[in-house]
Image (cartoon, rainbow, N blue to C red):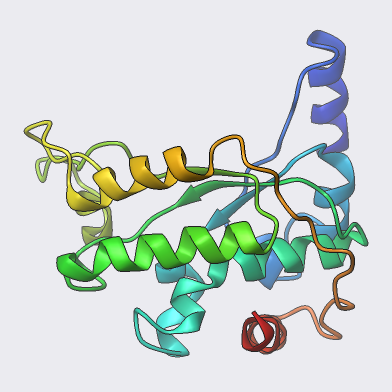
Length: 202
């Protein structure tokens, strides 16, 4: 990662370069170093997927493990890096009707985004723009993740995401003054215990 960042900086100096990785560095020891990921990036790019991180094992789809994951992962990354005010971009997130009723997705979206903003997250990118056609061979989870359906109709969560962007765009963001020390053990169970402690205070 250090070599790749050096090459990117040499090729395009003064630009923002990030390493957007799925949840594993923050939950598993055998991947990128979490502290290095924070230190190496001017903006920490997080992929915050309730479905893939195991949030459903710790609560329902409108409980805190699902709705507060973005803010908790931002705090976790900053904790690993010892950088309470490091800018955070949630580069990928989203849910679909495979994991919760379609009618609950807008409510989940609003709670996820607003609690992450309260946790000092600056930017959000929903994955993906459109639903994927069933003719492609993907995991069943991935076909309904869009904010827009296959007929180019904006879904309720798409309208809400636009409203949230309009409501918060340009407003000052309060960054945390400090974050707790990182989990003593770097594994799935200890990490989730740490995040749920954070969520209980959010």
